[in-house]
Amino acid sequence: IDYYQVLHLPCRPTITPDDVKKAYRKACLLYHPDKSGRGEEDAVFLKVKAAFETLSTQKQAYDSTEMPFDDSLPSENPSDFFQEYGPVFERNLHFDARLLPSKQNDSNKKRNKRASSARNNKKPPSLGDENTSIEEVHEFYDYWTHFESWRDFSLQAARELETEDHLENAESRYEKRWYQKEIDRHAKKLKQQEVARITALVERAMAADPRLIQERKRLIEEKERKQREREEEALNKKKREEEARIAEERRVEEEKKRKAEEKLQKEKEKKMFRKCKQAFRRYVSEALEELLEKEHALEDEVDLICNELDRLQLTGFNEKLDSKPAPEVVSLVKKQAEDLRSGASQKNGEEV
Image 1 (cartoon, rainbow, N blue to C red):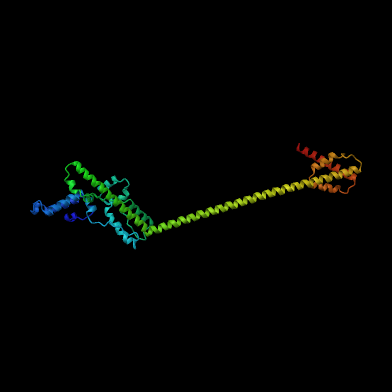
Image 2 (image 1 turned 90 degrees about the vertical axis):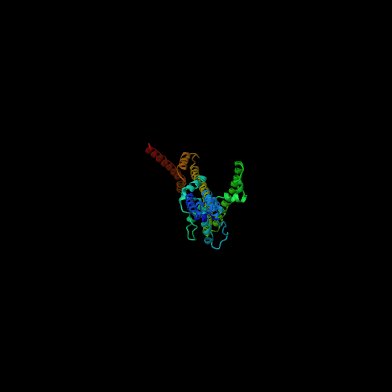
């Protein structure tokens, strides 16, 4: 029996108890025994009375399971995703708790803290089509991921457990309470199955949605691109570090080579300077020997000249002494020493 037809009401979740009461009063004007004269056991009036009692106290439970509803889900591989899934989502919006009148909506808020006022007041987003922006697509699935169903399975649970008559005819309140607990337990199980059904619908739609498939593909490509960039950057960094290492090794090697060459040059310079001094001392020694002078007669002058002149200067001085007669060699050495002493004295005087 369709109790909505009995009371001439549309089957909508937004029908309020006041709407039911008004419709019952109109029906009573036609079918009440005082009006129809058919007595208290009139079948039509009993249906009207049953419809009023059920829709006044158990409307959600009646709408949830007693009214025809297609619970089926679309295939996982639809030929036309939007044509197959769009009507299913629209159909299940019938049980959206956020679309109930404000009083019932407030009650749902208390039962579920996750429900937000923004979602309650906003019109449910549609599935859209292939041109819908990805932001709107995510908004749609976010809405359905947090979908709240007002379906009440208490009547179905009582019917399946065959406890309706036992509940009404219970001999004590304890027996009635026990039957009610059994009904509530089974209704809770049926509610969990309903939540699982909606979850399966959403997951199946998200897996088959061509827009999300394209978005996932784009994200994978973006991730792979970024991975390639990171790998390329790592390779470039490694290459730069390797080049820097090689350059540093080359620099160190060149520095070592330069220092070795400088050391070799210094050693060579010292050796040449030593030979130059030896040649100078030989010139002086030979001249003194030729003049029959003592070997150490010009020792101070020789030491002064060796200490004050650099290699080039001493080489030039040796060239002057070369092939000169002994007296002239001695004279040149003394004059050079005297010049060096006078120059040192003048320099010291200037500093003072």
